[in-house]
Length: 389
Image: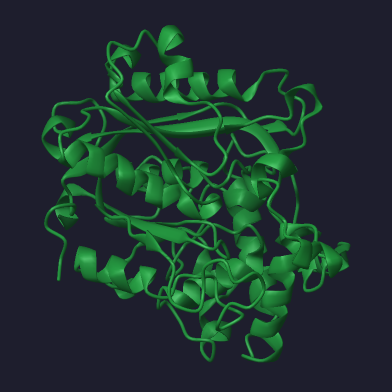
């Protein structure tokens, strides 16, 4: 049943993004990067930053709204919250912001994320949140790449998904980054040979299968659909943003069932039920790729293909704009544009609806954005133009 309470009742009207910096080189703390992104999003929307009365983020975000109130000139803080998950909570944060607006708790809500290795703090603390369990450590697993690699090996060896799909996802991201002047990987020339010759990080992941670590801030502003009509940007209406974990997932360490899953069982089904659309209707998708193999799993679990048909669907030609069947990561994604828990994927999903992407998909009316695959709790979101409401 379509979720009439949430479907299209709010919209993203402002997008803000700082430049991307190689980790530790911004010279600025995450708090300043967050505020720069928020002010830019407000300017993009044509809203004074002081009007923002709700602040939502996720995971280990430490830059809460009350810390930013003085600098932003906040008139009143009416809502503030974190989604209890890591990168998997990006769309969930959008859903939480929309809930605050629909229920009248806030009027102008910003969803944001900022990270910085300013003064030497490793991003691993923010990304992994210091929660690597003793079970992982005693078995030599101390990084997300290693854990995700085990699941992708299962996808390849037990489910028969060609390893080439990982390569083609990487090639598509870097292909799109070349046309994006903001992308930190825009000057990286990546072809199949370069990919195959790059060093292993954790098999089956080569160097170019893995997301980056960057200093940056990113933010989007949501308001009610009614108010969005009067602002200067084309609204990107939020149709749905479910989050959760199916039975056999959650905090089961490395015992998820099925093991190759990205965690979208149930969540993706709810997205299609809530919005009234299905995978065949989507024009463009921003697929969170902490590692490419988990992105392939996310495509499978959203219903774009099956393990048996993934080799036919996940190909370079099918994943690139403007003419691919499902162009993905059209800004370069976490691999080639930059990584701050995937928050910038929201901005690119919105740009596709506005028609302003550097790799624009013609007549994009439905734009998907998925949260971090492999997290104990994940989420996913679908944006629409006015024509698709």
